[in-house]
Image (cartoon, rainbow, N blue to C red; front, side, top):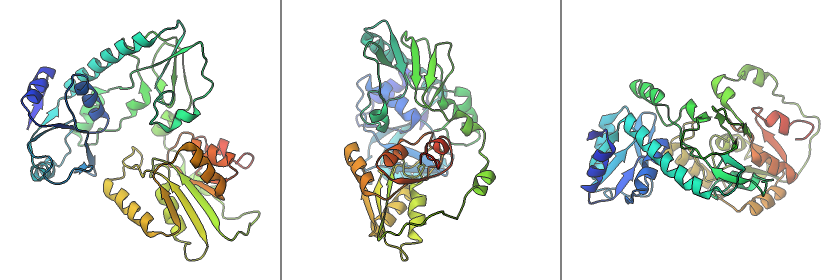
Length: 374
């Protein structure tokens, strides 16, 4: 293994490798992948993550399928010995680690290339730059909820990557994970950003002299802890009315299963499975590893096994939005005990379908799911 400190070194190393290249997934992996793909370098995407100071290779590749392969890592976990032994068992012959400065250079090169592409798309004098992928990105759930775009205004995508080299260095020296940093909640427009008149973000605070707005933001809650004691004090066990139904039909919606409270929903309902008749419609791809819960692949697999074993759970990894709404209409109660959602669009969808919704009392939930409108 050797550190790669310049782009020239990296390209030479890649050119000497006859086999496919596998990059470390995550924020750094995205920067590296985008940089290499723009230069026509063939890459096989494969997740490389660090959870609880253990090195994990995730995906569908079987043992031995990494033979004679150059593996590019954006960050090395504290337990190097464990990582190196697993790589050796997998058949990897060599791997390289990036210096922070090289990652920064690659990021800047990506931004230059993106800026050229974006500038060629701007056809109107009035332009709105956006960071939320909800405008155009078909893979992002919020796409269906970006509404009321103005026809005479051009919407231009802005480079989303930010980097804080000092933060990365400090966290590496302290053997801390580097895949999630508070600086990602802020956006610093660089000199390569297209000349937009206004910046619109989904959950990002802009550090700029340009006019900007944010749909929702959670920077302050991430910095200052919420008062958990006060929250628990207001939890009540009494109910004004009781409704007798033969079978209660619950529904949970959320790709990010753990951060949205999916595990807690299953744990809570499991305590009553022998006392009441109910069903749970679960619409989730069981995404794990978010910044809040830091769940691992093993935890996801354990939850998946529990879901398979419960006859009262109907699990769908994904459904078209129109079918999701139909499932909401069939349900009695919506469950969304999110641990860190800014807003929670699924709550509005369940409410609109006539569901009573149970949520946590964080961020915007007290406003959108209170006694008057919930």
